[in-house]
Amino acid sequence: MASAPRLKIGLSACFQHADPTRPLFTNKTLQYVEQSIAHWIMSSGAIVVMVPCPTGDTARGDVTLQHYAQWLDGVVMHGGADVWPGNYGEEPLRDEWTGDRVRDIYDLALVKAFAEVGKPIFGVCRGLQLINVAFGGALYQDIETQHPGALQHRNATTYDQHFHDIQIVPDSRLAQLYPGMPRARVNSIHHQGIKRVAPDFVVEALSEPDGVPEAIRVKPAPGRSYIAATQWHPEFHQQGSDTLDDTAILKDFLAACQDARGRAPAQQANKPAGLQDRATRLLRTALRRNREAAR
Image (cartoon, rainbow, N blue to C red; front, side, top):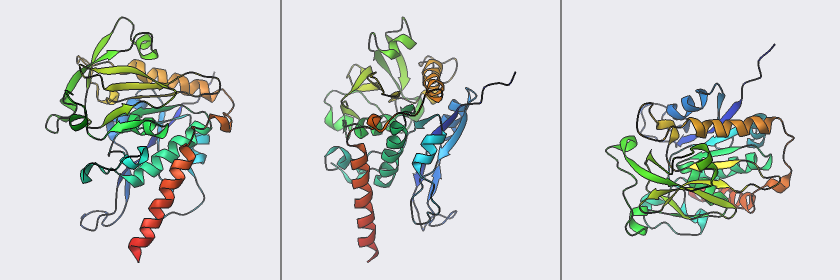
């Protein structure tokens, strides 16, 4: 008896923009994935496919993000640069918190494409922040600056060896995945975080003791697909350590992908409110600024 086809999981691309001073790939835009998160998804037996941004100066052909969303079983939005504050109606408080607006355009369009066809979406770190913003939430541009009494959420020296505790919200799906575990320890590698949770989403974990949201999930509703995210990096968990085991989180996401494979694509009504308009506005603004810079 033939085994079931392996799940095909998309992984959003990170960007290194064209740099004339770079000795390799001089002045070329690089799109890439971080190894740990690809291997994390592959640990389940799923096939990982990086979803490249189809637009840019070198774009050719007619392949779109919608084609990937129709073909793949789900997508993981992974970490990276800050989200541009303009996406949630604010001006950057510092130049270094401007983020990567080009990647924002791509990520928003990627989330939109998968949400429209009802395919599961899971976000990690920046992925959580991007999902929250895409659906109408807002962020702290810098937790330490804007959240009095906040604990340290990022340490540049220790990086993925910097940890803090979280409280898992009772009766949440995350609590069901980790029964009898009201608290856990996770890595913490971010300076931005959720300030206002997107409508129709619930918080499933909070950092202790400052209460910054650490996990979110869309509320179940008819015709609404699986969308969840963690602020920590589950792919960085090391077996035998005292941090939260990532296995249940990954299995939950992949089970949703398997379930979605057996259902008909969702109708357009599943599209997040305002997401298409937001992505379109960002794209038009970026193109206009590029034209102005070229003059």
